[in-house]
Amino acid sequence: MKYLALIPLALFAAPLAAQDQDLGEPMQEGQAVETIAEEGGLTGSVSFEGNLDDLGIAIPAFATDRDVATPANANGTAALGVELARVITSNLRNNGLFKPTGPDSLPTPAFANITSPNWATWSTRGAEMLVHGYVRARSDNRLTVGCYLYDMALQDRLVAEGWVVAPADWRRAAHKCADLVYARLTGESPFFDSRIAYIAETGPKDNRTKRLAIMDSDGANHRFITTGRSTALTPRYSPDYRQLVYLSYIDGNPRIYVYDIGTGRQTLVTQSDNPTFAPRWSPDGRYILYSMAVGGNTDIYRVSANGGRSERLTDAPGIDIGGSFSPDGSKIVFESDRSGSQQIYVMDADGSNQRRLSFFGGRSATPEWSPRGDQIAFTHIAGDFNVAVMNPSGRGFRKLTRGWQDEAPTWAPNGRIVQFFRTERNSGRTSLWQVDLTGENERKLPTPADASDPAWGPILP
Image (tube, rainbow, N blue to C red):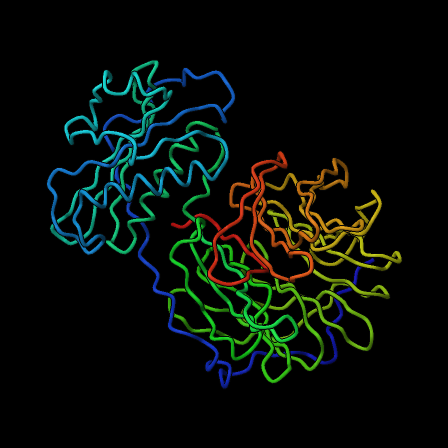
């Protein structure tokens, strides 16, 4: 079946009006991090042959050539070097793959030893890997941060890289260093230098205030984007990371907005009196999928990210919701109850060739395609709600969580970690969690309020 008819109640972008009153202060975005080449680089293979979760990594404080004042830390570059190492240690520990030891229990190396480690100092520390680094204040007020990974058994440098950052972006340099270590030791793509959008929830259970919020992948640098004057739902990052699409209910009517992270401005894409759900980007950033209920039937629509006339992609009786593109943009996975219960379906990007994927019992909802293209995460409902994955053919079903109500999965940029939100039994409290594809290493993310509808963005430039 192919259905691309123009819907009669065509929706058009409207000028900005009262919706601006819900925006808080613009998100202050730093510039792209400048990468600089460090002497050395990849020099050999890793000597460690055990399981990565047994791999000890020593991460002492980053050294500095001279301890001077910096806007990044009131106590100077030496104190900043300690904070850099703490962030890297936390990143690698929370990932669940390594056993890092941080700067608070290690000696601080001299600046001259960063590129030439004193091996005798570290040989009794029980670590297989050593992370050295430095931080230097520049004349233009920016910071240079260098990161070096050494193999203790080989007494050799594995990889080295450096970055120039604004003082406000010093944590990004730490995330970049953690990404460098993670990628070199696992062979996987990095993910620490990324951000997460979500819905912050406050107030009583029957009258929640829901605000759009954004934070670093480790929960730092938290910022509320909207004030809560209107309800915000289901944010998603654009492929280039510069924008967020989300659903807002103003005066009880649903509207889909695109928020520009750099400028703090937003554009109204569609508005309607009909219930609207789950906006999602196409991989090229040109289109937004969403679901809308019209005359008792809920279907999936496509509209230009700049607004304009919408196209309907489904027309089966029942409720079709969601819509997540495959990474190459050729297919869309979605949920539908056309078979009598919520199940996962897939179709071509133009709405043709619709077919059911999930046949493993229970109900299935909120599918999200992995950025690697090899897995689809979704909410599996069989009594409890749990996050599960399957491959794009509908096979390889695996539960990743064993909670009471775990739902709405979103993928890390490397496609190896799934984030979701968990609702506590009886209390209704919600929080963000993540789990890796083994179903292990569950971790709760810190947020200043209850949290739902997470969206993990791509790696920052």
